[in-house]
Image 1: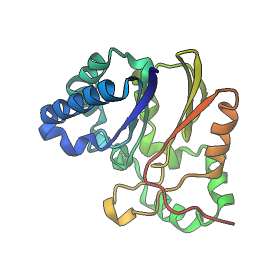
Image 2 (image 1 turned 90 degrees about the horizontal axis):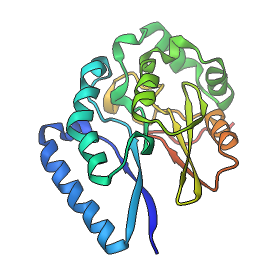
Image 3 (image 1 turned 180 degrees about the horizontal axis):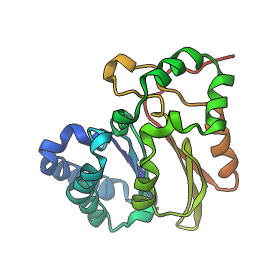
Length: 219
């Protein structure tokens, strides 16, 4: 029986110098999956870190589209309505980070209540580092949006008569570009998950994308 699946892709920036080899290897794997498992891939989840520096997003996303995404979509006979993406820590524009705001966040975000307060408030002093990313999602992810804010963006797509919900959660809003030093500091708030569950309650199959979160906070 034919089956439809989504494939998650991330950390593309690490391989940009060898992008042609990556595409060749990926195409080979996709052929093997399709032939051996009788699978038709109908959705692509880009799970962050597709560029190296968010401060260079204006040029680097264009390059990413030309040398990676467009060839991949052509290979799979898909369009942008089948693409779902989230930001990783490398998408963060560190030039937009205020050091005093960052110090305050590190000291104040200590429990679920404080985290949910930030998510509820949609504070631009917190979100500025990824403020451009909504435009990226609007350009490259054109499936119907059922919910959207800076922390959570949800889509519905019908595939083979089955309703799929794609919850793209921003767990990089706490990244400051410190690299491995901030491992374990990434945060996914309970409010983000609640919003996604509510927005997608009517779909049959729910898929969630996120990146680099720490252990759950229990309070």
